[in-house]
Length: 296
Image 1 (spheres, one colour):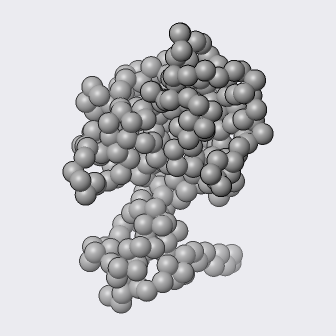
Image 2 (cartoon, rainbow, N blue to C red):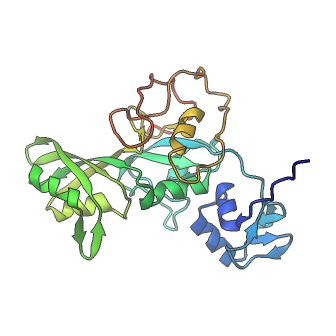
Image 3 (cartoon, helix red, strand yellow):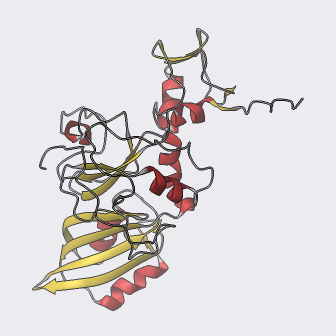
């Protein structure tokens, strides 16, 4: 008779992140505030090892076992904060997201005045993997900037640059087009330091008037309207996460009731032109998304 494998013990912060409660950092803060308990006893360390979430409560409420991972593409309009709530009462992405969406966490952040592709996931561990510089997931941006800069100066950014003591990694920057003293610049980078694109371009003497994230890994903004959300299909998420270390749980297989997309037709906004991830095949245009936010 084959013996059952011993259960795998993991840190509670990782288990709760996988369950979609919050990011690891946020969970550590919640533990410090005494909001998480095990069998009625308040936990005081995120290093607690558990085989499951049985008996775990958050704010007195039992935690459900982790649901399958889901990933969404959101076209963030300018004027929204990438946070759940703002003490000053300014609008956030959560004010724009469809009410029927599950609890999701943003992958990285976009500044209030930056627009474009923002990935959202139900899995805190996937969020962490996609954000880590070591993972090397490429981010692509288009910036409209005022001022003068040469292509040679932009190409020098491929060596990285240090600004006021902060080291920024290699940036593949190209002058897309110029109209008078305004120019559109395309940038590709593999880290997400705070306001990195704006600070680098300002260091070159440019004033950024518009910044759009056009892709994150193999997922591209394409023609997704501002304020709309589109779920990444299961097989595409599986293919993408296979290239990541410690891939997340088997992704969700179903859809919302309003999704009329036929099986096998279309895909998420995968950018077939970029060597940014494991998915490089061209996919047919997908049907309209069932998740409809505001017009942005």
